[in-house]
Length: 57
Image (tube, rainbow, N blue to C red; front, side, top):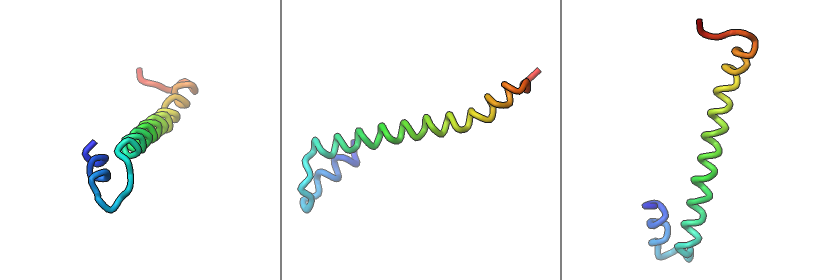
């Protein structure tokens, strides 16, 4: 939220506060989807290994 306020507070910019908040919300959503994709990517080899019969005893 602090970043959004600083972007809005710049007098040279003609950006509305709602537009800044919407853009930040979109950014946070994209970052969340990236983190979920990275988690899935990291878990895939483990799931593959387990499917082949590997695992802890």
